Image (cartoon, rainbow, N blue to C red; front, top):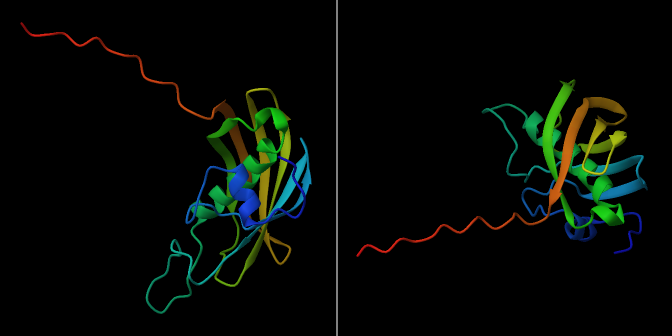
Length: 161
């Protein structure tokens, strides 16, 4: 699979296992293998996961924003040919800060930068920005596992006689 920028939604679906409504990245505009990536999330009034109270402006939940950052990072990791048959597993987050709310109509630019990358695990620093203002940032740890889970061990069936 050859990656040509910008990556649209269909190209992202060929990289990530996520599907609507859980695929949170709409486009990738920049990608430097093993270094950094820039993705876009367009927040729409129709997004199912928006949170709001009566009379209040809807807000993108911080957990969804964190997952969008993780997905952009996963695209960066899976862009490497030797990782394409692997599955990035979200292992943890550190120092995540939610600095501003995100609303429908906002375009979120998500940047992930490699801090450490090894054959089976790594650490990414991520930041989400709206109009150049950081709305969320933090560090995420991931591990690379097999794309399919190993088959469970067969248990012998005993006959009752």
